[in-house]
Length: 198
Image (tube, rainbow, N blue to C red; front, side, top):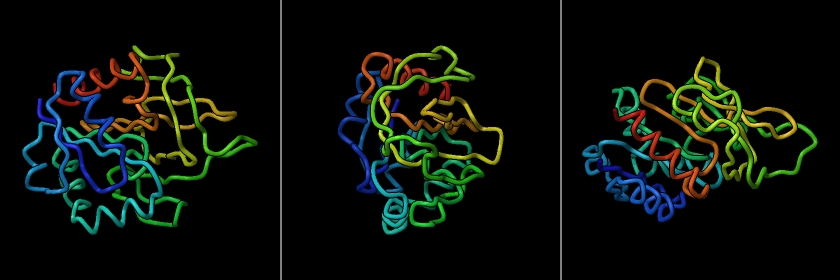
């Protein structure tokens, strides 16, 4: 399996690449839409600010590529901010997103420490994620997705529940970092690739 990692200068690309190799995918990092179009699956990672992420995608002419890839029903996996970019807009910079999924991204609510950083479990799981109910994964984020459609695949409690995974056709998003989540993270990453490419 050839996994193309979108390089828009906002992700922990090396750790994502190593994790993909560990689960049997041949990964490469690129900001060339032509090269990425030869992938079996495209990975959109992301760490940092939503507005900067969208600006970087647009500057590299990757925003249209990712949207077209998803609309064509090709396998797409978003990790952390990569998942957030799937949505219509974000409060972080009041910026439009890719619009692959309907909804918005809002700041985490409640009397909690921001960012939400550390290990937490998946709840209310569906699809392949049901095998990972109550397992621990690593999170680092200050914002969470609020979908407007039936795409929620898992939730996680941080005083209040937030959406921690989404699935729509062959597009999957994870708010947590499977590449930083030890053995369960690798197992989940492998299962996700099978789910969207099988």
